[in-house]
Length: 254
Ligand code: 13P
Picture 1 (spheres, rainbow, N blue to C red):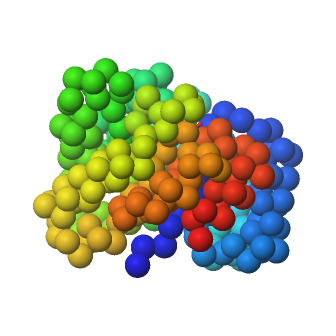
Picture 2 (spheres, rainbow, N blue to C red):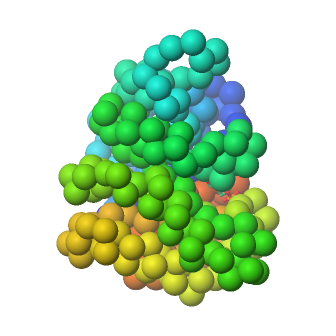
């Protein structure tokens, strides 16, 4: 049994007070409504990490994630943050390879595989994102594209390490567009990713790794997406910014 994960990726939104108030209110509603059957992760800007950790510290169903880390542990990289620094706040997860990082900051596979290593060395759970653009899907190259992202980002890991990773399938054409992958499209790719993991490792390991879907997950489509056998929850952008929307999605994951 894989416990579902609902991870809110705030991207570059919310000042310190707004962010901490949001976490407090969401946690309060989760507890009041007894919706503790899924793991809830807040992937916040760096400024929220420390205070966010304090809000969720005693709750085993809640965690705080960073949205990025550097591929080195220290050095002359002005403006960057190392996985060890993230871990020192008490945060337990870190998104790696989000398509916005790949697209706007030119992150490549070599850097991303090093970021995964940095996270694992610091005992941070990497949430590794993969996904194709519309051009790639229309050219029917999405399977090979996603396979390459998985191979280059993850397949250097040992059997023990791969089990620490969460994968997120986020088709670029579905991010922020309001056009989600259909539950069938999501299931097809998730099953494909799990098969690739099985092939590289084994069925037992592949069966334990959580694969999240991201891209226009909303209160009205979350339940159907999450009901697919290989969809183990979601990585939520826009709908993770309002408590009501985020709570509906958490409810759909119970
Ligand atoms: P949206 O839910 O806004 O489409 O964003 C998805 C995403 O990029 C989460 O990481």
